[in-house]
Length: 151
Image 1 (cartoon, rainbow, N blue to C red):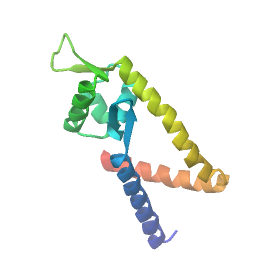
Image 2 (image 1 turned 135 degrees about the vertical axis):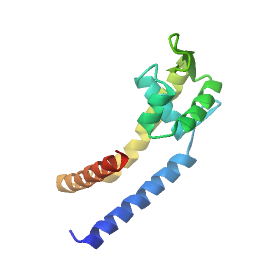
Image 3 (image 1 turned 30 degrees about the vertical axis):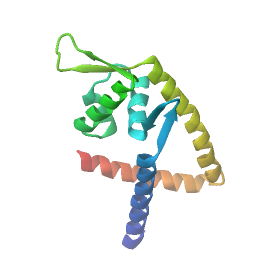
Image 4 (image 1 turned 90 degrees about the horizontal axis):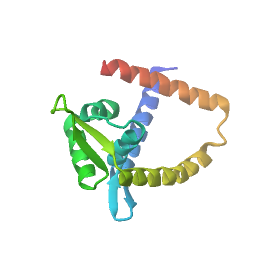
């Protein structure tokens, strides 16, 4: 592959990522009277699958600053979607846990996300195995490059 083709692929990837992030940032999810944004749902999703996480755990998982996670935690706590419990041995550590309401909200979101994914999947069902393998190989290489950058 020529250098200019690689640069074109990289630029298309960045553009697509920016479009995706723009949609994620602006999209609101509503459950009854509760309004949530994508980042809040990501935190709830992690707490659903890994109960008793800390701000540090979430920060590492989501590649976000502890400050940003703290803001999200504050919002989720005020909406009664999570609880906070101080560690008895070290009071600086706060364990976060999803509430029953938080569980209902994330389940509602996951059901609706399945519908959205259905639309996405229908666009790509015609893709053959060679196209899929090529795209997967590209993303795996890109991911490895990002991993090296983050080290």
